[in-house]
Length: 150
Ligand SMILES: [Fe+2]
Image (cartoon, rainbow, N blue to C red):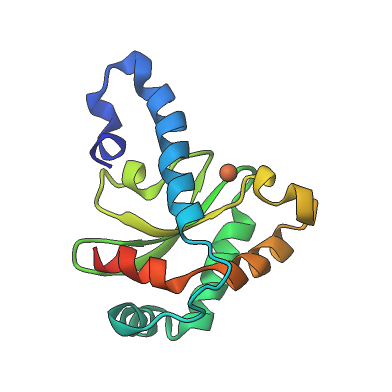
């Protein structure tokens, strides 16, 4: 995490490789860890309170995440991130970038949606919207909560 938050401290000739490979590793770990066959379907506790205070309710958050994921042009990710105050925000990134890189570690992703075409093409072809709908069916909010409470 520290490395991804401060790529500028690495030698110039390895920055791109760490950004793409290190980012890809970190992002996919977060993504696959959040998927479950029998997921917790709704968030609770402090995270739920913060979602309600920030976005209105969970469905409104899902709309924002879906918009971020749908509008990300080409390959990339949509994120729900937190800062050290426990604030929440929704963003998107191109390629294997993530909020750690983009904010020097100020914002840490707690939920990521892979919208590279390889994430959904086999099952959904080019229908990114259908994939995002299905993603929420297998998203385990317990994992997102654990990430938030870390
Ligand atoms: Fe991917």
